[in-house]
Image 1 (cartoon, rainbow, N blue to C red):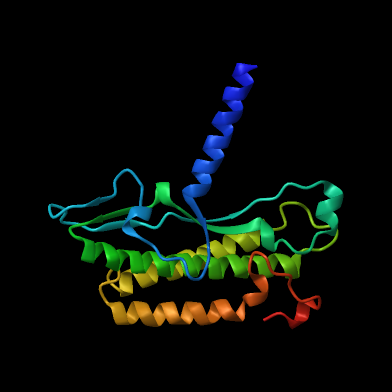
Image 2: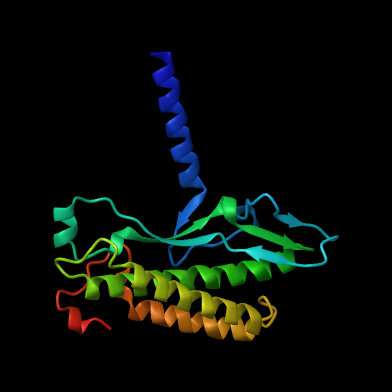
Length: 198
């Protein structure tokens, strides 16, 4: 009895802890230096090379019977864009440099949500009644590759956020496109007519 109670408390504690350390994408989320809880995070004047690992993860996860899968078209809730504090790292010589890197992470978080929405749209438009459970893989892979290409380009072109005007312009373009894909937010129901989506 005490073993079961201990196990239950252990599970509850781990679930609560992981929820606290994971942030679902939201447009107004404000990053703080304290959010970057990866083991290598450091703000120290002796650091000569800056480093940022965004901790942003895009994933597609579902559990359903074959019958449920056959008749499901809207997979919006199954595609997630999350920020994982334990995986996020900032190394910078001072808080000013750290804040610059945080601006870059905010761009990356929004870019990832944009691609989550593009994945949701692809799944919605391409899922057929008799699609195999692996039908999503080519769409997911294609969108992740596109996202990574844009992210790398922006990191390089902005010199890791040093060129703030370029970063701001890129970020505004992403925010505008996010609005264009508003039917594909995680909680949204896409329009019934598939051909009328973006």
